[in-house]
Length: 183
Image 1 (tube, helix red, strand yellow):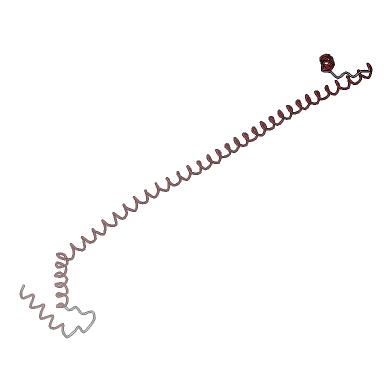
Image 2: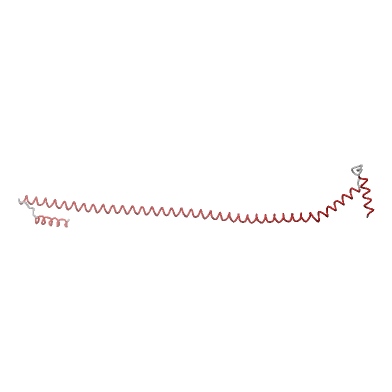
């Protein structure tokens, strides 16, 4: 093997002059290139390869975790969207219910105000009727009094004396009451 090394070294010395053609193979350069490559391969395999594999695995784990986190967040976002839609529907339903309740309350209030107005109108009519009846009674009383005075005055002219006593008034009032019951 030592002889092979010497042959390679001898060829390498001859290569120092440089190849005469681009297609010429320099055996020394070829051997040294392979030796450096194999040495570098074993060094990299022992020291760099585990670090590269570990970095790749770490990167793979972080990507996997990122994907899982993204999927979880997407599921949470979807759930939040559904919850938001549900809350919006509930809010819309609640608003419609509030509007319906407000309309019902307004209708009830309107009906109460109409009823109150009707009651006030009835009260006014009752008061007006009472006042009319009172005024009628007052007018009838006044008319009776005047009738009694006129009757007494007419009777006094006919008789020729003045009839003004309380007893005479009582007789005429009783007679007028009997006339009222007949009509």
